[in-house]
Image: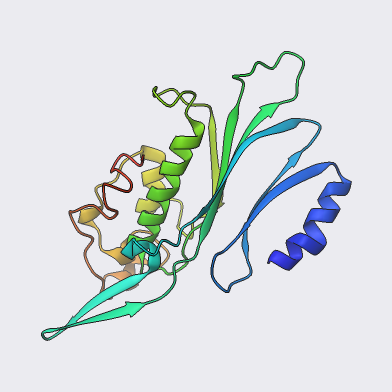
Length: 212
């Protein structure tokens, strides 16, 4: 909750020597994401707040398309989750200008049925991490990266395996299977749309390699 951050966590953690960065969700919900860091140990070099809501991208708004006979029925809800990325440098005597590391935290959509949106959100988030953690914009060398947060996914789910393995063939899954939140005994009897073989996000926005 944003008021808990402002009134409780931020002042109390500051007493213990911690600074912080925070992003609130872009909708009417009051929660968000936060990173606390020791001011005497780490220098904040760069930061990026990442609201996932994008008016120009269907899956980052939150649109479910149903077909009722010959009429398309569009169901809207706001996918206003967010992420936060920071680049730090240790405050040590021998730290070089290139001794940086990246920390990213996020809170993905909860809905167990909308694995397509979760994948779109993490694809967008990884692209922002890719941009901020590169040592140089023209190379494929990266600073160390730590990713954390609430993914609303089980450890052995396809979504979690995607982060571990670095790839996913998502068109073999239905949307409800991506996060593993619903037991398989229930999932097999539930209707859910098959994920497409096409790109979830427009390649002009984020590539399939999770980069811009």
